[in-house]
Image 1 (cartoon, rainbow, N blue to C red):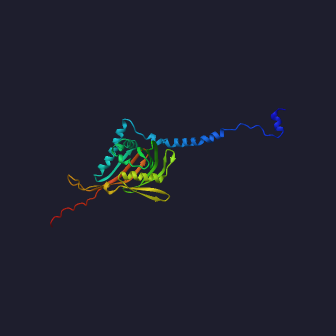
Image 2: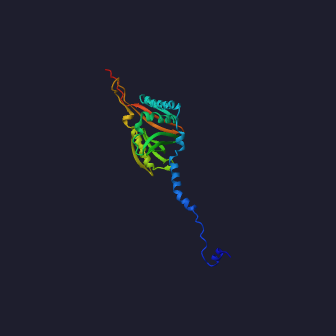
Image 3: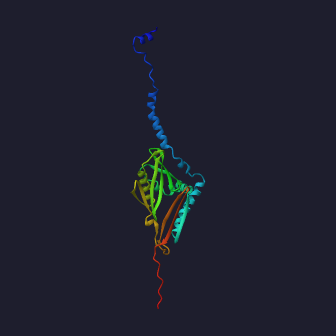
Length: 260
């Protein structure tokens, strides 16, 4: 009988086995792995944002088509009657990527979250998926939101958020809605947050100063005052349709009376 067997038969302690360090090693690195996965989720942009990019030589032409659509609305506002315009998702994204930062940088400036750039949109039935890059402290991530837009009445829009996130990290919908309100105010609209049932909504109104054209321009012949209104809005897959009316605000002149 050797010494180990003798020790066991005498009731003495068994030889100490080697400590299993695998479990402790995993517990030590698991926080780092978790942080890495969270970081990867935050910094990975959603698939729709990558797919909505419009680059290359065709971007200028697509942006020009969107500008033409806006010009059509301006032209319709000077004419009596109904009007309608259909805008394509690709043209909108081309304008957001080229003309907006160059000609209207004030709309993107002044965010409390960081520097905003490269806004893009994916249009789905009754839904606009909006994404934008947010840069702060040398880090750039994509914030996104699924936005519903409906109409309460002419020139009165109701905006609500279905979902929002920073990469795969959820964001509070009310905070995103407030930021949407600030962006729309910079674009000239009047906004107000309200609580409707179990969620917040944003009311956006086209003010009279934008909806009405002056009756007497500084130079040139007098033109009748007109008011344009957006009466309906429809979001389909890949397209946005606006329809409305333009009408004169001047009272018609009475025909001269002839003597009896």
